[in-house]
Amino acid sequence: MTDVQQTDSDQPIVRIFDTTLRDGEQSPGASLNRAAKLEIARKLERLGVDIIEAGFPITSNDDFEAVKAISGEVSECTVAGLARCVEKDILRAAEAVREARHPRIHVFCATSKIHREHKLKRAREEILKMSVEGVKLAKRFVEDVEFSPEDASRTEIDFLAEVVEATIAAGATTVNIPDTVGYTTPERFHQIITELRERVANIDQAVISVHCHNDLGLAVANSLSAILAGARQVECTINGIGERAGNAALEEIVMALKVRNDHYGATTRIETARLYPLSRTVASLTGISVQRNKAIVGRNAFAHEAGIHQHGVMQHAETYEIMRPEDVGVPASELVLGKHSGRHAFRDRLEQLGHRLNDEQIDEAFVQFKELADKKKEVFDEDIDAIVEGMITEVPVSWEIVSLQTTAGGGVIATATIRLRDVKQDRIVQDAATGDGPVDAVYSVIQRITGVTVKLKEYELRAITGGKEAQAEVLIKVQQNGRTVRGRAYSVDIVEASAKAYLNAINTMIALEGVSTEAPEGV
Image (tube, rainbow, N blue to C red; front, side):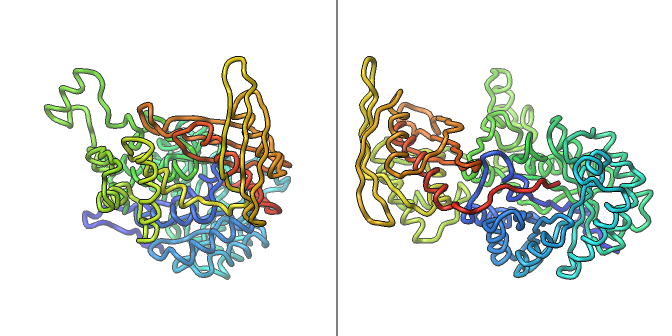
C-alpha cells in the first residue's frame, strides 16, 4: 500500500509532476535544445518539483539524449520518460532513464470510445491487454511505473475503472487520469475521481494523478477539484505552456494550495520564491512570452493602477494583494545597471534573477553586458535574461555575421550587403540583394550565401524593455521540407536582430539535418 506523505501539520503533500520539458515543449515553436532543457531541469529541481517528465524518448535521438542527460544530472527528484504501450517506446524510455537516481517510466494508452474507434481501431479487450502488458514491460526496468488512460475524462466510467484496477494490479505505482482535450468540468472531474476511489478495489495501492489541458480555460480549476476529491499528484507546466491552449499552470496550482490552504487542506514541496525567476527562464528559452495579466507571474499580477487600489495597497497591502510579490520571487526592486556597474553588482543581479552560472560563464556574460551597456545607458533585467538565454541556447554555428549594411527609405530600393563567415571552411563570403524592405533584403542575401532555402512562417518583433534605447527581440519560425525551427536574437538595431534571428534558424536547420522532430501525440 502506498503511504500518503504528510507535512508537520498532518496535511497531505500533493506531488508536483512537471511536464514542461515534454508536453510544454510540444507547444508550437517551443522546441528546446539539450542545453536549454538541462538548464530548466536544474531550476525545476531547485524549485522542488517531485517529478520531471524530461521528454518522449522515442520521438527523436535528440529527445532521447536530453532525457538521458537530465537523468544523469538530476538527483533530488524523479525523472520520467514517456512511452506509448508499445515495446519499442518502452525499451527506449527505459534506456533513457537508466542512469537516473529515481527513474520512472510513464506509459499511456487511449481508452475513450472515440479514440478506440477512430485512432487505435481496437476493441476494449485489446486496449485492456495493451495497457496491462505495457505496465508489466515497464516494470521489468523500473519500480516506479505510471500509467495514463489517455482521454480518461471521455472514457466510460466502468471501463475506465476496469483499466485502472488492472494496471495497478500489473504494477503501476501511479495512475494518471488525463483530461486530454480539456473537455471536462470541475464538478464532473471531481465525480470521476470520487467514483474511481469507490469502484477500484486496489486504488489505495497507487497514487492518483491528474493531467488537465486548458482548451476551455478550466485546467487549473479541474486539477484543484481533483485534489479535493483525493488526487495526490498534479501534472502541470511552468506558465501553463503545452499543446493547443496549454496545460494546467504549475504556479497557479501551487499558489492556490498555499493561499487557500484553509479550503484545500493540502500542500506541496515547492519553494514558491523561485516561481517567478523560473517563469522568466522558461519564457525566454521557449520564446513564448507570458501575457501581462497572467496570474501569479504576469507583469501586471502585482500592479495597481486605479487610484483607490493604490491607496489601499499603500495603507495595507492585503486590501488588494492576497499574496506578496516576494512570495513568488518577484524582485523587491528593479535595479538598473549601466556601463559603470561592476562585476559584483552584475553577479548579484544574476543570482536575484535565478541564474546560476559558473565563474567562466559569469565572465562571458559580463563581457556581453559591458558591450550592451556601451550601446544603451541602462541595462534592465530583461536585457540580462537575454544575455543568459543566448549563452544557454547557442546552437552549433555554421555561419556567423561579420558585417551588415542596409539601405532603405521612401522611394529607394531596399538593399542589403552582408559578409558571412563560413565557420567550417573558415572563409568569408560577401554578397548583396534587394528586397521589399531592409529585412526582406537581408533574408534574401543570407539564403543566397548559405545555400539554405527556407520559408518564413512567422516574424515577431518586440521591445524587451521600455525606452527608445530598448533592445529589439526578433522571434521567427522558418520551414523547410515539413520541418519547422525557431530563430531568436536581440540587438538594439532591429535589422541586425532580424538578421541574427534568421541566421540562428538556418544554423539550427543545418544542425538538425536528418533528425526527426515530429512527436507522436501524448496524454
